[in-house]
Length: 552
Image (cartoon, rainbow, N blue to C red; front, side, top):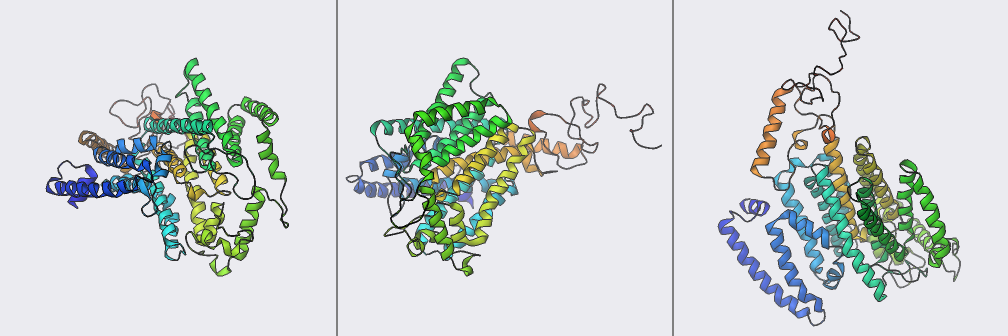
């Protein structure tokens, strides 16, 4: 227990156990140097692994916050290094980073579990439970365990966001980090396009031409990451966080156009539809002129870009399954899904065939499998096939519970709620026709962003009369002074109010409250008299002094 506290709060005061840990770490580093050096001939990039490992370890020990910020800033853009350093047995540097993220979340949450609202646990809890249960009867246990650990790191980032975001300023800082993380991704993508280095082509039998994936192994990952980055950047622009001058506005618009150009280079139709949906909904709800912009840009692009026409018109051909026919991407997916669901035994409808069973059994049920094994190309179909109706219900609950949290923001931050809900709906729609479970890095950033949104929603609009965890300081490592100040403020509220805990008034706004909610002061409240209106406040009493509507 003492060693765990030392890890949770840093090495200061670890004493003898800390020295032993450092000695063991030195031995491990020496052994790892020898092992990694053996791979350097085949993979020269392995020479950079040990410095990166040391930097990561020391950064993790020095500051949890700095470690997480640096990881979020560089992980997406540095993905080629992680891919080259991958080793089949241990997973390489990426696996180590995933483990550190999980450990980071465990350390942070264990210091004060009550700071994490119960609703946050229930977002991912059912799906994680079903995935863990699916490991027991999985036909591909090693692959299933790797996928489960990867998604455990996604859940870790989602939960850590509740500790990072305590108010709107913190939330805006997290959005800034997500925005800046797209810069190295854009630079690597531009370099790869200049070098003619393409990524994943057609998903199945469809010829899709050159598709660029930037630092990611498949073009779809880059496309979905760009959709999220565009949504975040668009919100920051429209909420006046950036683009306050003519020069900065030109820079923001120029960067958004660059990201749209990179999105076009991915040739991912579902991502195009997602961006179109976000801007269309914004135009319908907020600024109608954006609908005109979309119509003009769409018409011009359809006429000027032949590859755009080919990708759109390709869905009108190859829809019939006949011998030697060339199917389009969507028709091929429908055939795959139909074969899988028809092949399923009714006895497996409830619990499925186990984690990663779709890929393992695809040659048995897919009529066009050939010598290859295929992924489901749909998170919904894959979840139902592998985890049954119980798993599918847990997957749908993940999005429903997230949407319920984001919905709270419509009352206080309607623009943020609108764009956040659009991003969530877009993610759900594209996951229904793609292998979303395999896109770990994108899921990192997306669900961290959703965690920040949900945390802000819970902070601004808590449930009813919330417990003290929503009124306390939420830093990852709060100072003793900040912690004492928060506890003193909470104690003062308990002593002055008949109600133990009250709703937090969003962002300093005041509102009318019942007389018993004395701790919330109105804009005209007298000092030292909680809940009492000031001399200029409107009075709801009659001249006689009794409340209106009450009999003598």
